[in-house]
Length: 98
Image: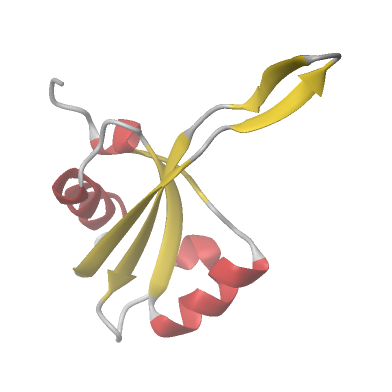
């Protein structure tokens, strides 16, 4: 896989009750490109948000299926989620007050 720009690596922030609680522990959740690795995710977050990344955890999310008669049809594609821990004294403003 070729070089991806930081804006291709990170697709969108994930804002749920669970991710909002995690922000209190300096952990932020993003949907990322399925081909991206932890190093690329770390560099992308540091570049875009100007913060120091302490740790990156990734989860491959499986696709969701529905039914169409007897057939199983894919309702949502597989995607990759990253939980990024940043230095305790820093914040990503994007998530604040949502």
